[in-house]
Length: 292
Image 1 (cartoon, rainbow, N blue to C red):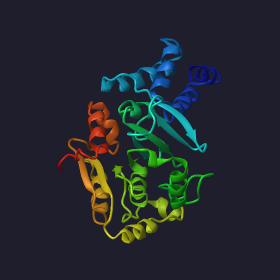
Image 2 (tube, helix red, strand yellow):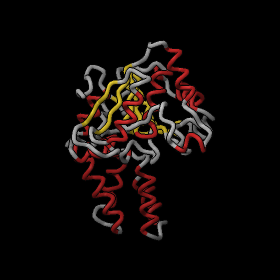
Image 3 (tube, rainbow, N blue to C red):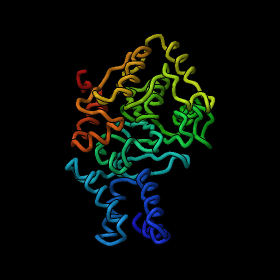
């Protein structure tokens, strides 16, 4: 990764091109890959490089933990599987993770992974280039959401894992809930996600997509639904509105974080030094969410 980065950096002619390179890297690289790049660069490089390294390293150090040893591999050319290089799936958990519109889990991927226990969790990161709540599938994989789920089920041998969970942030939150129901997973987690009852997002009408298949799925399960958690900041009025709307159609449990008024709950928790504890709580079956 360090040599690839050096080659790509050398091709950049402006600060904006360097920043775009970092944005692209932030969506995919692991904590170890970042450290390799930072180590290679040392204190050298143009200001955008040193700023990116300092900002990312500072965020990764919040957990006070050693660099999490995730490796990654491409799945079907569209998704990334992050896994422990020295441990197989047996006895471990898989997170099927749905990125939001910025193609990340509210944070650069190496920072999120640094706060997610590599000894316990593998993570399959899905991205939605169409920014359509994944309802248009992913180009080259599937044309709609049910097809995307079928593809994911075929790409990853989830039967080898102890548990499989779905987690989504923002635009990926409702798809994660949908996935947990459709695939009968251990838990579905939405962080700042929406509800199928809210149709005021112009993307639905302008892109010809609908949450109606989800409503049909919910009805077909006749109450036999997985554990579902919706997390949001206590003072973020819009996210509260979405969570309460979702609770009218599904038996979800709220994880309400006090003192947060912004949509990007994950970034706020990072700044407060609480992200690792939050992820431990919402990902662990035996640890209930915080009281409302």
